[in-house]
Image (cartoon, rainbow, N blue to C red; front, side, top):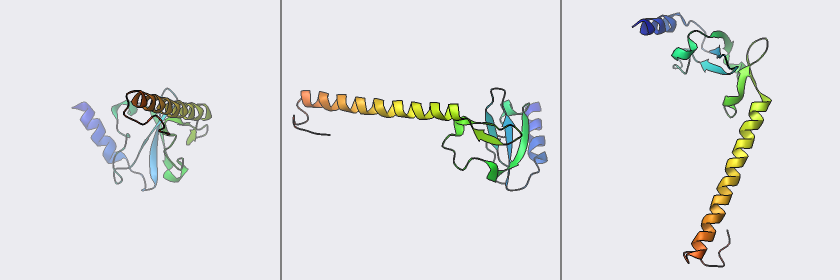
Length: 124
C-alpha cells in the first residue's frame, strides 16, 4: 500500500513540461528514461528507480534514435551519452548473430541437398 501511495504522489508531483523527460541514473552507470504522464509512463516509476538520482532534461537532448539504447549512460555534467565501448559490443554481438545465421543457413541447405530435398546444383 505504501508503494502505491509513493507512486501516486510521484505521479501528481511530476510537474514538467511536455518536452521534458526524467533521466534516472542507475548504480551501474546506465540510465532509465521516464516521460511525463501526458505522454504515458515509460520506466519512470519502476520501483527500482524511486531511490535513484535523477535529472529532468529536454527530450531533444536524448540521442536521436533508440538503436543503441543499451549503451546510454550518464554524461558528465548532465544528460545522456552513448558509451562507445558498449556501442562496439552491441555491434560486435550483432555481427556474430548475422554470421551465425549465415552458417546455420548454409548447413541447412547442405543438409537439404544431402536429403535430396534440394537439387544438387541449387545455389543460394
